[in-house]
Length: 403
View 1 (cartoon, rainbow, N blue to C red):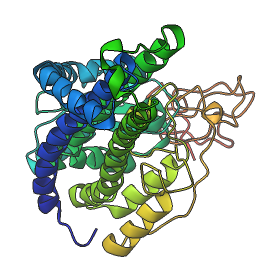
View 2 (cartoon, one colour):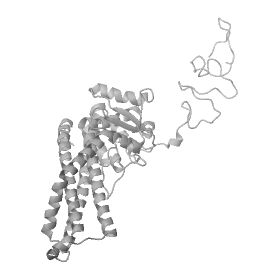
View 3 (cartoon, rainbow, N blue to C red):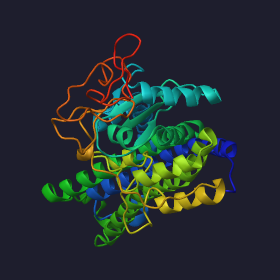
View 4 (cartoon, rainbow, N blue to C red):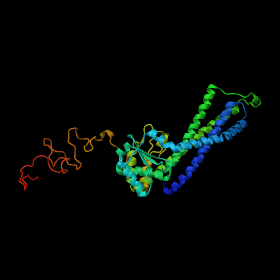
């Protein structure tokens, strides 16, 4: 993290975005070539190896314009409708200042303080503690937070999380992750299509042989080798698309944490927010692509090798080291069922107890009805004792003074 500044990271992300788009087309052409090899083996299983390679290359040249056009259409669809697709999975709903004044004001203040165009704001109904940013350009940028996050975090911590997501937008991380999602989608779709065509064809139709080329038969050994080569190319393309996504995701999170501290000037808020989110960010029904965009992705495979995010401990340690924050350690949050239904009550209050007023005074003593100076909704002053005052002395207006 010390080797890269925020502005250097922005420039680097722009170059990476172009490289990812180029890499997308390369992977698609590799998959097309692999599919062409399998098609040639299916049409003529007894030809020599060099014949398969030449025919596969000829098929790639013939399919080149159609494959390119299809990839461009896929990119345009993702560019235009990726937010709608994500909302369909997560259930995020847009909110206004009137609906979420606390959240809206925190985000607006951050944007105004740094001259950042304010992204759209959405809330998804989930007990999970998480947030993520999406979008490809200024008119599409959106930050989505969960209702669980709003309940569990205080204002400073929510501001830190919003700063984390704003940094992803400023750095171009969001654009890159959407492109990486497109790459994964194209590769997964093409790979699955080829596998289905291959195995369904061999299962139901078998393979056809060409009698005109019987002199070139070599017992099918070349056909088996070509099939192996094609399957390896498909597997490597799929693996490369995953490695690209994981590398991008892991490298961006620590910089986004640092960017949040740079925006809010409050490293302790970012640290405590991460500690509260830790292990509580799983979004039910969300795909792995969506989880990779979140503040924390608790999904991990093969220990930490294929984890999409650095561990919370590693991120907190970096913030403590480089920003001077303080780590409170793992935090235990109260259950959502423990929160009172009455905003003025406490979990210890019974259903028949009078609510406490906003100034913190106790309710009237049992057996004494509240007077005009004791009721929270009376005159507004609730500091006196309930009931009559002993040994009253006459006041100037005939009313007994209060002790």
